[in-house]
Amino acid sequence: MAVERLSQTFGVITVLDTAIAVTFSDARDVSQGCIQKISYKGQSKGEPIRMWGRKNDLPQFREQVIGDNNITGALIQTKRDILLGTGLYAYKVDFKSDGGMRNTTEVKIPMEAQDFFDMIDIDCFHMDATRELLFHSNIFTEFIRNKGGGIHSMAIKECKYTRLAEQNSRGRVEHAYISGAWATGEYAKDGVTVFDREVVKIPLYNPEKVQNQFILHTGDRMLNDGYYNSPTWWGALNWIELANSIPVFHQANILNGYTIRYHIRIPKNYFYNAPTGDDNPAAAVKARDDEQLKRQEFMDNVNTLLAGKQNAGRALFTQFDINDQLGKEYPGISIEPINVDIKDKALLELFEKSNTANISAQGIHPTLANIESQGKLSSGSEMRNAFNVYLAVKTNTPRKIILKSLELAKKINKWDPDIYFGFGDTELTTLDDSPTGKVENVATVPDAA
Image 1 (cartoon, rainbow, N blue to C red):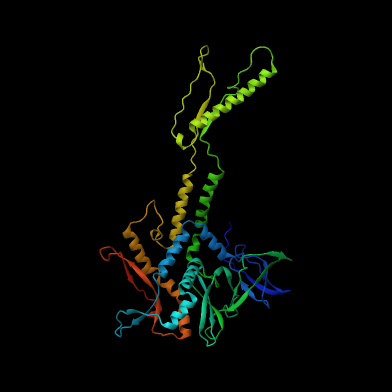
Image 2 (image 1 turned 90 degrees about the horizontal axis):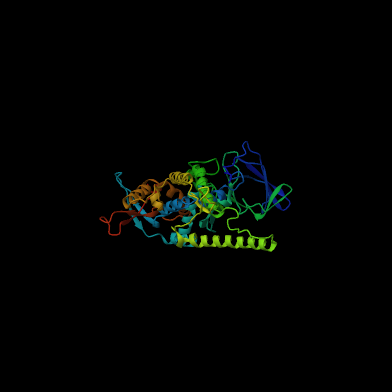
């Protein structure tokens, strides 16, 4: 499978009868983009869009690569579970006038906020947002206002269905386009790939305007091409694809390969007894038929003796005749074992190396996802230390990104500004410190300072 890199190509949507055509300009490098015409229903004027990958299907490709891998999905799922912790909670902060340490106190979520959370299913919302952040490093959140100007609802728009408009002259992206057709060309007409689906145009959030509907684009901008962010683990793509290929190779070996265990050598005419006497065609035919019966009987007897798990380790005894005049053996049946190693040690070692590279790219200790490393699982103390270190070092920034949509809704809806939202944590301890081995505690967000 070819690797689709981030595209540097733009397209222009133009009117084509009742549909919309997107014509993509040529790129300097074939890995960055290509000329492509795509038509959609539902638009009324031509506008440039930004492709995401050379075939405009990089998010789909990325999710397929993850789904095919044996450990990457588990690692990302573990990171998601740690980020979301014990769930959303509300708290207040006691700021010390002398600059001392802050004290946080958990409080009940305000009624207006709780009603809003129930309506949008806040737990599913945050799981979707975290998935998009960890998979693609981008989060697209759609907001819809009510008649009073407050936020009525917000929902995650998946990256595989979202594309950005071209930057304007000031270097700003003003719109996003939502469609389920970006990577599914249905048929071609006059050099144009046609889709019988609509494209919905939605403005990106502009704090200087009151927008009835808008999309907030957030994410980790550590790696950014001017439009879309890229997850840091994407640098391990070659290793991930390598790891995905090795099990397929071994499976094909088992399904399609030969695994012969014995080579049984039978001299030609060994079972043939030539008829004696005058030339008799009928006797010759009968001798050949008898040969076939004896050969099949011998093969059936060998299979009965050696085949199947119940006959494992069986010994086979044979005897042979000697020509006394020549002092040599008569040609006889020989059974030679064939040693077949289908494990392919070199490939298995390469598979282990690729798994190690994938784990390193995710930046999380494999023991937290219960993944075996170096031939063994980690101890309880190692798991506890790995969890606590990850919680302290790796969760603050992602949580801040995930909560941006909620903080914007809080601001627009004018909820109590002294109440903050965060994710609760479970701190792993020893049984000496806690009978259950864990202590419930709370976490703050950087904006609370």
